[in-house]
Image 1: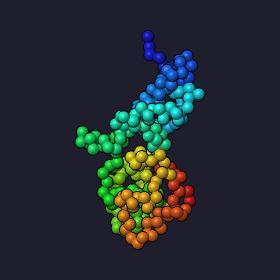
Image 2 (image 1 turned 90 degrees about the vertical axis):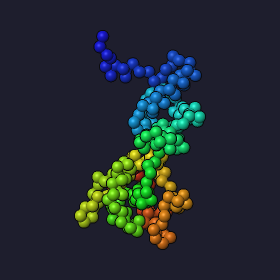
Image 3 (image 1 turned 30 degrees about the horizontal axis):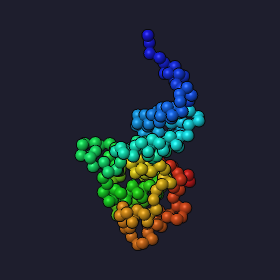
Image 4 (image 1 turned 180 degrees about the vertical axis):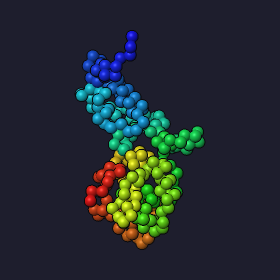
Length: 233
């Protein structure tokens, strides 16, 4: 007997499970949602999860129950980059690295130099940004090596050309950037002052300099756009 076709398998899938008792149905939905997220290589959007549970299922409550069950586990269910993902808790990152785990999603944020942190932060707030613009923010040249390191980590992309003489590459953050730093969207980027208080960003110039460059409190950067947005001008 041949294997069932994919379409036949989908047609036989029952998301509602009305024949099951309510408690059993809820546990089955929890298992389905967690298994889908576990098997996915990237964050799973809400609409994809809604397809594996009944229309009467309160997905928010279901996810809350999954999170509650994972409290004692070394991983947790988080919402990043527009979807849900199972991630190891930050305190276990050193153990994963020591075991030779090189995956950024599992091992937390990559180890970046202060210049690389400044560069990727500037790109996140200014994007799209050219290397010359990043150098202006940093108060020193941002080398191609710095840009190369950020691209190797998958944190930025340089597929755009700036509308400037010579059409230099302009860089934007990627979905991987959101995943690595635990952001659902760019709306979650912290204020410049928070980065400074955490010691993650040092002002290269006079006090108001970074605020002026990044447009903090102004209309300079539209944080409601997703990672990798293009120009709208």
